[in-house]
Image 1 (cartoon, helix red, strand yellow):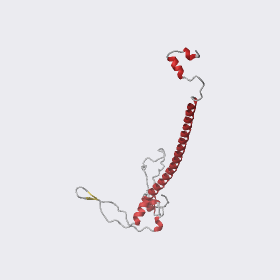
Image 2 (image 1 turned 30 degrees about the vertical axis):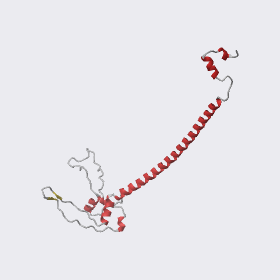
Image 3 (image 1 turned 135 degrees about the vertical axis):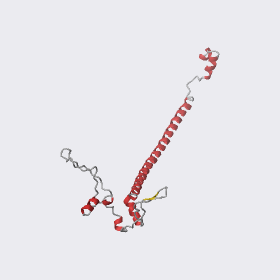
Image 4 (image 1 turned 90 degrees about the vertical axis):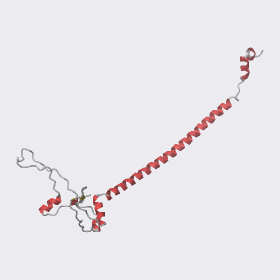
Length: 187
């Protein structure tokens, strides 16, 4: 009887016959080949994934630049709309078309009576082209109401009433004094 196979009986002996008795390199080759293929496939997959992420990054930066350009364009267009819808610009274009201010309106009440006094609008002098591009004079806009300094109660005369909110426009004060109103350029 030679070796350990003879000593084993039954099931153990059958299993021992299935196992190789010597050192075999043939059983290791498929395992090494499988590991190399898995590592190579993982490396190639990682390379492809990295390339697609870089491509997406370039597209993202290009879209951000385009968004910035479109935002700038939108702001410029909004600024143009604001300039064209300003009251002085609307008045200038209306006068260029021959329109005149309507004045006080008259209303027709539900019972058929007219409230207000309707009358024909008066034509204004035409606008010269040299004036059309200029900013409107400040006299057309309401003058800002500035606070008037009030003396402390101890030095103020008791009988003098304090005006609640004096608002005198430069054009009104010029009409009463006989001097021309000062004009300033503004928007």
